[in-house]
Amino acid sequence: MTETLLWRAFEALEPAELYALLRLRCDVFIVEQGCAYADIDGTDPQALHLLAFTGPDLAGCLRVFPPEAGGSARIGRVVVAPGSRASGLGRRLMLAALAEIERRHGAAPVELAAQAHLEHFYASLGFARIGEDYLEDDIRHCDMRRSEGLGA
Image (cartoon, rainbow, N blue to C red):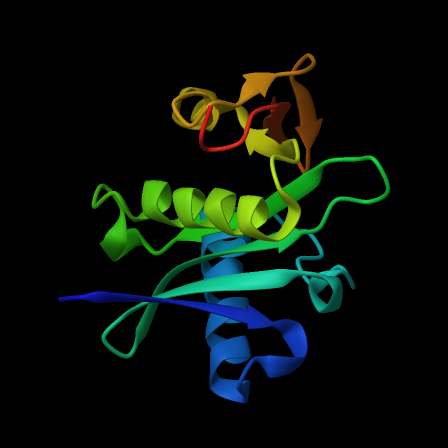
């Protein structure tokens, strides 16, 4: 089935899209990973959201924050539904996010907080670790940064 990628500002999210986004993040980050944390953190309204639909179902999503003065853009809440894993969707989402950041902000550096077991995945997209592992909500994470644009 064909995927449809949609960019949405928070205020442009349809109620069903917002519900699907929050449900997928809850299903994966809270239920599947057994991690009680506040997913609704008050920053979604400042983010640009990328939604990937397979037919009517939300297969994955992420959010992008623009760079602050002289800083890095940020990608977060990257999630792929269990039935869409190993399909390359995570890579397609990340490449679309990097392309959109470059389109909007030039070759701005991009940062993310990766779950440590996904470090190699993000490294394959040009991200490099910028610190030691740390626990966030009892899950090992590492901060990563990509300094070059897609054309590099």
